[in-house]
Amino acid sequence: MELPELRPDTPPEERDRRQRRRVRQQEMCRQKKISEIETAMHRLELVDHPDVTFSNKIIDAYDNINDICFNGRLPPGKDTIHWSPTPYRYAGGCMYGVHGVVVGIVLNVSITSLPEMISVVVHEMMHADVEIRRLPIGMQSHGRHFKDGVKRAVEALQGQLDVLHNIVGTEITLDAKTVGKSRSVSTYRRSEGITDGLPD
Image (cartoon, rainbow, N blue to C red; front, side, top):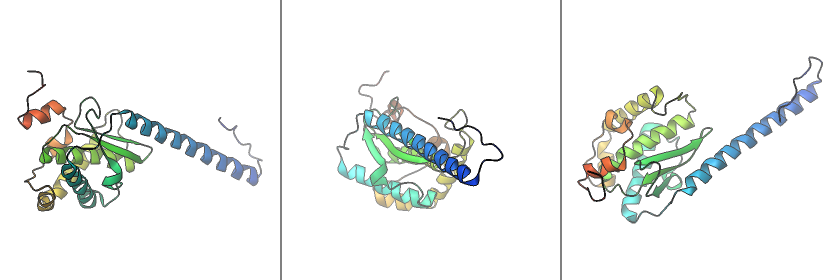
């Protein structure tokens, strides 16, 4: 319900009351949108990762990447990372957020390569950072702010690859072009040499 315009002679108490009401309405709208995003995320088939060690390594890597690239402004990995066989259109992952709130990052459980998953995690974390900082994305979710952020994140990580190597136990290489692109699970699975169930 939109409040009528104030007249110039409206008393200050009435102005304050209307302002408080407007703020309450905006917060209710914000909470409703967050709830809708949470519902959409939970409609997915969220599962526990079958390899707890893999999952813990990804959460640990997420938290370290958050500190290195995002000054810790993203929510903690244990509260943010979720797993699904179908996060969104068979993508490697999908960030769910609205109005500056990150509800979760859903990662595709079928990606079994730690280096490939780290690339997906950095990609989705960049989406989360754009959401938290409420940067304009225009008509494309991989716009200028996203691409510039990916480039800065990858540059920051280049000097810290030993940290990620120690976490995941394997060599990690990252480049902005690969991290910045959305890729289908079939692309990840082919890069891992898995072709079962993939179209020729």
